[in-house]
Amino acid sequence: MSTSPLLTLRYASLEDVAQDLDMVIQSSASDEWSWDGASAHEQDAWSSFVQDPSSATSSMVAGLAGKIQLMPGIALSFSLLSSSQDQEAAVDVSAPILPPDSVARIKQSLLSRSREWSEEGIESLYLFDLLTTTQALLSDSPDLHSSHSTARTSEPILQPTEESAATKTIIELSRALFWSHHLKAPSKLKDFNNWCPELGVWGVVRVGYPGYLCFEGETSAVDEMVRRVKGLQWHAIQLRVQRSYVHATDLSKVEMENLGPVEQALLSCALAKNHPDNTHKVDEKVRTGCQVIENLGKLVERLRGCGLEEEEISEALGIKLSGTQ
Image (cartoon, rainbow, N blue to C red; front, top):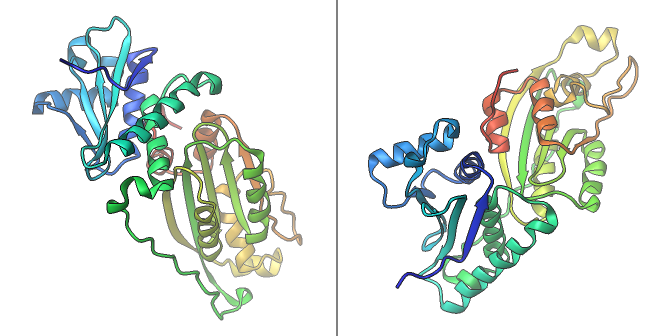
């Protein structure tokens, strides 16, 4: 006798199903997602559906099923319900290595979370939300999987170099892009409004569901920002992208515009372009700050306007971008 699934998800369209699966797959390691009981032909068809749902047919996605592994022996299963007239899918928890009470706690957490969707206006990305909810629960409750917990290693704090900033001709810069399950509380923004000017880092923050944090500046300052963000110990936050590069000082600007090497480097940052806090004028100090954006489309437009590569934007946001700049 078959058992009922933990949750039945109701999507507005197959496109919403594909976007949800794409977010889950993109935010996970390559070996964490797998198609369940699929032939090679079905796997190819289902992967194509996720990438391009507009060309999908009912027969193409019939029987679609997969699972996302959170850690060895613990997974969320997903399957489309072919008997449904609407776009419905079943989700359940598979954790044979855990005692029954631990499995029950995970399931109850997911059921409780699903009841909050209507209050928060969440109408898509259900599996992605359940994934991040489970990740947060496992992270906050190591007793659920004590035999699988691993010791955390602390990250070293970079020490400042002895070379004077005024004499540097090459400045190393970095850009760090975080994904967060959600970013709504005004108190969370207060830190970034203070830290960006303090550290000399450009910040662009997208509030809402999901949330994104983008920082750029001197490598030592960005490393410190990354350390502080991780120290906040938010539920479900990931450092998606961190890239470093160098800026060569234009010595003529030092004389003509009174711009030192660090100031030149900061003004050259991609996030400095069209940043509302970038009001620098000749003979004035460069002042960085934090910009807040509420709409995801506006964030994509903002990052594209900075000149970031599509690949970097897609990797950071965990979504497939459409259209061109």
